[in-house]
Length: 219
Image 1 (tube, rainbow, N blue to C red):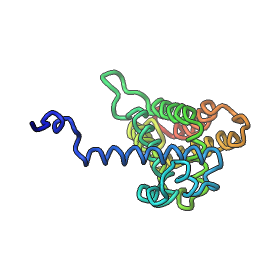
Image 2: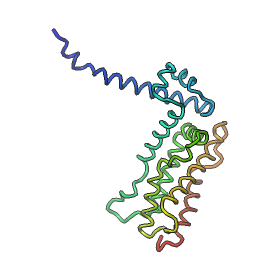
Image 3: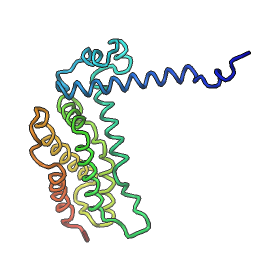
Image 4: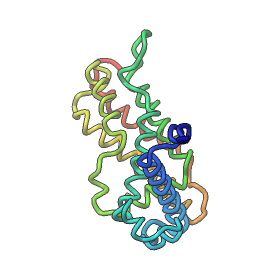
């Protein structure tokens, strides 16, 4: 008798290979993060990562052609979490409009909480951004979300239009990145964070909001 039930229950070979590939990819990412956290991004090699993940060097390069690609994968995952967590400027419900300044405060609060929720990954991303040439030119993961809120505030005459929305978003992104870097890097050597991240981000944001309010018809 044919093993019909077995044939039905057995997953296609392509599915099994895809799941195995994803498991290997995840093992590589986790191994790399452990090494980046322990040794620093700059002092970790691809051979180190292959050894920690217990895979052949060739297998590692089949998944990631360079160490930068592993960092980019972690950065993309953090970006997805940020995008999912940030309030949508356009989704305000049926109540009165939420002021753009308040939407920016909510976004910065989310950014701070997410950075604090996974300190090892935050440190690795900061180290990688400082080490890899060209990272400074990459857009901040939530740049477009910040820009959209600033543009919303300008369209409502809540914010000054002296500076374009994308310029203001660049300033906000830089404020966040610099503050997180100064908060995270001392922790690499086991020292405590030099300040509380949330209040520091809030203080920077309020300075920018004060400038945006100047010249606006209403705030």
